[in-house]
Length: 253
Image (cartoon, rainbow, N blue to C red):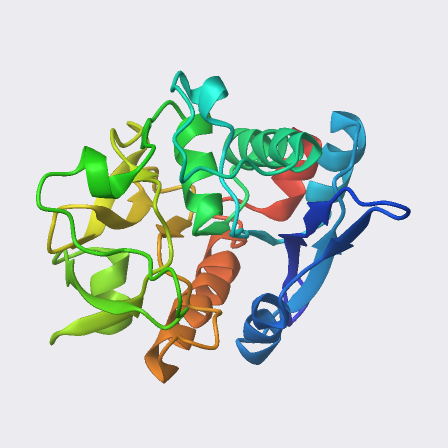
């Protein structure tokens, strides 16, 4: 691996008239850069072969969030009034990207919606609307402000514990979907006080993967949250060591 790992980041997508476009909040690529990585933005590619070839030549992946939601019908739900499905092209791409990241064991940081997509692809399920689906739910989204914060409980001995250490941790919150059943390949590493899963990590020692429901790249994040990206970049470097799981072996797979 080069001194600075190459980190792929999936861009958002919006169909529009007269021009469709892709875009990405600066916090994602600035956080990767500030943590010692080189960001590479991914458009919603149509062919799995193209996507696989690209992933074979990067060192890690950030699965980004989105203000929109997964299509509820595809999850087996009747649509809720609060649900705003993302464009089909982006959802299809995000699902394929998450599936390949899991199959190829690409070191992955999954944020917000990205955390939810990866959990679904790996066999987990979601709550469609936390306020109605979770008993005594906290407020997880402010309809007016984007700076809502709440306390999370970090599970001792997890990567989140190593990242934040002891003490009360407050994170930003802006979601109404959340993880219900966690996929078997993950374990919980942090929850909100109402039990909603706020972070998970891979149980596979050969796959560095952390998911956060909160957004460490956001302007509403705390200075400590950059440590999530720093831990990710260190995890990317560690997984690339030959005795663990090298980039070269992924290319040969």
